[in-house]
Image 1 (spheres, rainbow, N blue to C red):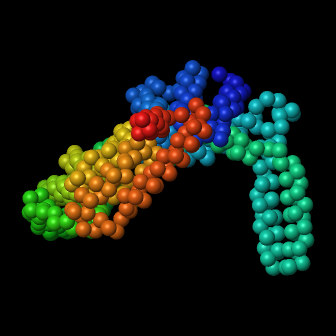
Image 2 (cartoon, rainbow, N blue to C red):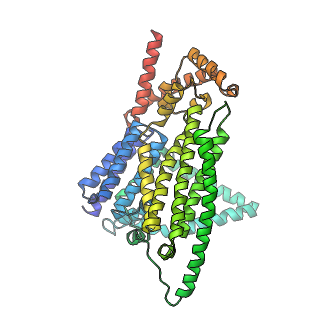
Amino acid sequence: MSKTVHLVATFMLTLIVAALFYNQSFGLNLLLSEILVVGYLFFSKRLPVKSAGEMFYTVALLISGLFTVINHSVFAVFMHFVALALFAGVMAYGSWRSPLLQIIHGVSSFFLSQVVFLKALAGSGQRQMNPFAWIWRGRIFLIPLVVVMLFVLIYSGANPVFEKYASLVGDYLGKGFDFIFSEIDGLLVATLLVSLILLNMVLWPSVNTFLSSYDSHGSDALQRLRRRGMWPVGMASLNHELKGGVVLLAVLNAILLFVNILDVHGVWFGFEWRGQYLKQYVHDGTWLLIFSILLSMAVVLWYFRGNLHFHPRNGWLRRLAIVWLVQNGVLALSVAIRTFYYIEYFSLAYKRIGVLIFLVLTFYGLYTVYRKVELRQSVFWLVRSNARAWFVVLLLSSFVNWDVVIARYNFAHSHRSFLHLDFMSGLSDNALPYLDYPLPELQRIDSVQKATFRFRDDFLLPEKYHETIGQRKADFLKRWESKDWRAWNWAEYKAARDLRKAGDATSR
């Protein structure tokens, strides 16, 4: 396909995508746009799907787009744009080895692809008759114009008389622009520009040679660095570092062993809830322990970053590092148990779910650090493996409508777990059918809560909660009625359908 045809296709797709999104929120339009673009790339033979990696990120883009329609959550939309950045990396370079470098490249494509598109635009058609060539050449006047405007501002601030004349000129220019652009729809122009910029990321990819070269030359196996002529000094330095590492890891293992013994006794088997607020016990302690685990991995990576991997007497250092990693796994398990206690007595919340997801990735991170120590893998391999795991786990997590899960779980367990009505009233519209309870039922739940949780009086009363949810229901149904098919999504459609059914059942 020629460059001119590709340019025409770019403008046609921009018009279609802008029409799908103009004056509409995310919904079916997002998925349709992705299908349209991927379909065009496939039939124009521009879509690289020769390797498993290229196919995986193409499918991930489409599936994440599907779940923005199914779940319609902020997290699902965020993960979709992460998948878009990875897909942009695929379009530019094909199969990447490191997802982290791939996503960095995808983000940089947001800017680099615009330059490629403008150059193609400037070079299309006959040079003598092509107005875009003059626009491209006119970029050299942009910097002088910015400099002139900067000095006008400086002189205006320093000289009141000059400021008066500059203001008069500015007023005349402003009136001129108002006259010219008074009939232009600013929202339509912005939608067209954003659509074009995002489409350029995948339709006009640009390869960042630095990132692609680093990705292709990165080694999974750690390489031994030999210093010719300096081996005695280098060996002495390694010996000192080896001894220091053994002492440090031995001391740290002893301290962590004591901490784990306390946790096994006090958290695993000895925990007893007496009605106290667990925020300090879980929140503050959890994040400190997670930070300590990450710091522990960094300590191991520091000692096994280079030639100590190949030292003939590094046996004790390796054994202590592995024990240290296992002990941190036990510590991570203690953090998980703390979080489960928090959920048992204080219900589900975003941060508690986030901690559990993060712990899954932490266990995998500890495993990969162990593999690095045992198999002499490189940091490049470590980062690559963990980046892939992060993307897969977070993508799978975005397939769950967490607001609905939280609403259903928390009300179902309100007879024994704290029900935070302030938090519940702020869940997304998708969860409204599971947040809507009759006032007598809310008052009954509140009486049960007060008998168990002494601090219940400091939170939202059931009457205020019922009023808030009632107003949100009315506002949501009104907004849903005003949406057309472009912003349709399953989560809000189901919520509106269930709310209407509940309303009809109440009115009978």
